Every structure is written in structure tokens, then in C-alpha cells.
Length: 245
Image 1 (spheres, rainbow, N blue to C red):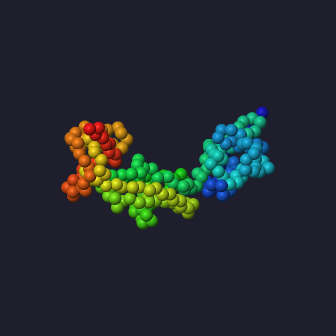
Image 2: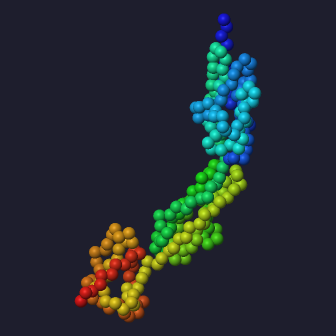
Image 3: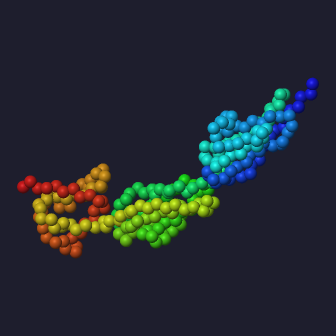
């Protein structure tokens, strides 16, 4: 008895790069061979019944309606006769989608003058999105990351990131408010109470400076500051130690 082995099949596609949820894709298991049966596999499992697809009468053609991420593949087709079977190489559809609403990532919402402002933006998109930045509606630059050295209070404002997908011709934007504060404050705060010393610390409370500004002497802060009476906080938090005497 002569044994006829099935040839190794391959998958042909009407569109390997469909738009998500909008385009129909037709997959065919080739070659078209007599006296064989065709089977389809997705993610290594036989096709579920309740999915948005349709099979031709002999199962050689698979039609996918409104392709989404969960049915993008990989697909395999199998040719089978009573004596042998052979399966194709896997094919995965490159789904075109996005961009989704981008997110702006920043270590802080508040910055000190003289520091470097660093922002990054990401939107889920295929192909990857193209990014651009604005401040208060004015264009700053293109690119996924924004870095501005030596910032001043003039850099406070509403920062916007726009993500655009040229394949879908779609664009989405998001915004984040950034505040830049001066690193100089008056040594005399003109608030009229007696303090023993003023200590400067990081806002997080993790680091404290060992030298009090007043060097332990009692002071009455009740006079307007002179132009020369400014100290650099190098932080955003003041700790007041009140006198009990």
C-alpha cells in the first residue's frame, strides 16, 4: 500500500498588519490539496467555537472579523490524511492600535530653582508613538523624554505630552502641572514670635542639617528682612525650635 505524506503547509494572509477591532483578515492554509482535512490552532490550542471568525466549508480558509489582541495569534494550520499529518509554522498578526491616553512620569511635582526638570511620557501604541511636549500650550520639543537644566520659577506651568500614531492617524494628550519654587527665603520671616533656632531639612525628613541658622541664640523675628538677609534652604521644609525661656 502506498503511503502519501502530506506536504508541509503554510499560512497566507490577506493582511498581516490589521487595525485593531476594525479590519477583517482572511487566513488560508496552503497548498490546496485533495483528500486532506484542515485544522486550525491558536496559541497552541484548537480554535474555540465562540469567537468572531468563520471557516470555509473544508476549513482551509479562516476569516477573522474585527481582530483584537486576544485573537492576534500565533496561528498554525494542519493538513491531515489517514496516513500522516503536517503543521505549518506559526503566524502572528501585527495588530495596529493606539495610542492610548499617555502618562507623564516625573519624580516630583515640585522642583527647586537651579535643578534639572526631567519628564518622560509613554502611551501604549503599535507602532510606537511619536511624542511632543508643550508648556502652557506652547511647543517645547519632540521626543519621549524632556530634560531642562537650571530651571527657574519661569518654568512652572502645565506641561503637556502628545502621543501620535502615524499608522492609525490618531493622537492623544495628557497634562501635568509642575511648580518650580525659589531656593532663597528671607532669614527673618517677620512673623513676630521668639524662636531658639531654625533648622533646615529635606522635605522627606530623612536628612537634617547639623548647624542651626541662629547658632542657638534667641532671636525675635519681627523686623522686615534686609536685602542681604537671605539664606539658601536647599530644601522645602523649615523646622522651628521654639524657645521656652
